[in-house]
Amino acid sequence: MDLIAQTAFDDPLANVKETTANLLHERDRRFSLPQAFYNDPRLFALDMQEIFTKEWLFAGMTCEIPAKGNFLTVDVGDNSVIIVRGAEGRIHAFHNVCRHRGSRLCVKDKGKVAKLVCPYHQWTYELDGRLLFAGTDMGDDFDLASYGLKPVHVRSAGGFLFISLAEQPPAIEDFLATLETYLEPYRMDEVKVAAESSIVEQANWKLVIENNRECYHCNGAHPELLNSLQEFDDTDDPRATESYKALVARKQADWEAEAVPWRLARIGKRNRLTRTPLLDGTVSMTLDGQPGCRKLMGRLTSPDMGSLRILHLPNSWNHFMGDHAVVFRVLPLGPQRTLVTTKWLVHKDAVEGVDYQPDELRRVWDATNDQDRRLAEENQRGINSVAYQPGPYSETYEFGVIDFVDWYSERMLSNLGHAPGLHL
Ligand code: 3BY
Ligand code: FES
Ligand code: FE
Image 1 (cartoon, rainbow, N blue to C red):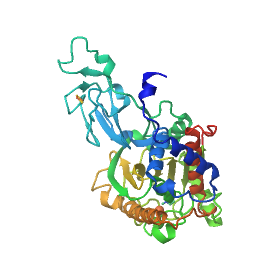
Image 2: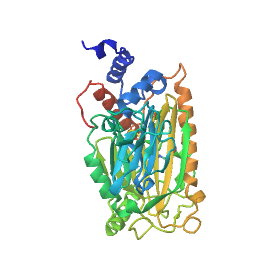
Image 3: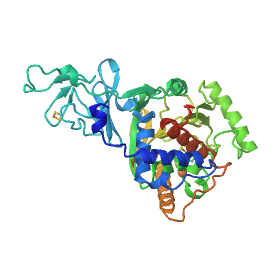
Image 4: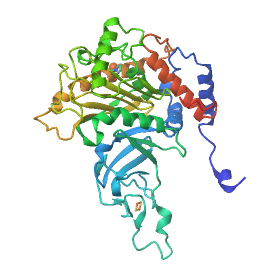
């Protein structure tokens, strides 16, 4: 045994891994997960290790780093990541950790820099991660080239930025190609963030995603959203009515004429894209269902584009309409704490106060997010009780939740080495 292996601590999660795998093997997939998956700190640590540091995560939008030197930081649990635009428009991502004594380099969420300069002792890195300068006191034989920033995998498509902390991330090419095709009409290099919100929900991240994957709760919870949202988004949905199917057929003919993609596309269980009509007579997720921005997105000539819905597990759902888009990012903060960041996007030439009012634009999803936050928090509180036991999902209303939990379970087992990689 080598020295490192002899001196390393035992894996504190070894026991947790085995118990988790057993629970997932034994679970009934028609039921919600056992309590520990929603509140146990060890299982949360395992989620961070096996899901959030091994999968591709939605990090932000390319429009947030439009020019050389623009950066944003994303905290994936303890691991802070910098995404920065370097020379020739290239996008780089690094661990936000100085190679001197490990200080965080960038402390802000976003900003613009000429070089990446550590605030502690001013070690200075190029935007491509090379160490350029380490003072004059590191000795004559100090080799700058050995102390570049540690890279993180980063990919962009259709205006979305994804990162993966894995050494060898899972395949993402098919999803990126599909995103490019579906987002082409929106010209994502011509958008800007019109408004942004971050809320912390006192609930496990899986409860936040489960809540988003069903509209069983919509009638009782979301009056503002239901002014425009259809409760189902697929003509194969068991609840789809004849009048919904007729509306879809009519709208699809319009979208075909506008040459915008609308077909349901699934890339495993992890990614799902589909364009679905809003309620007849409405075109946008605003209080009155009318456009929230007068300037349409990209090359679109009609505001009546329904909503292009994009799901990316484990941490994003999105709505792209004719006049604006809303993108959502979920990042776990603790076993029962989750950060939900929402951004409203409009055409970059739309003028605030003239073409759109940020307060109006964000009203529906601010209300909806707050309603969903309460639901997830009450769900969490109930689950924390000794009385909680896994309960049955409705196959009619909650198939999206079943799909998410299946995906989670398969990825966890596969990443733990317990099942063949099915690439769900
Ligand atoms: O619209 C959404 O993003 C999700 C889907 C169903 C309910 N929820 C508000
Ligand atoms: Fe960054 Fe010292 S820790 S320069
Ligand atoms: Fe909801």
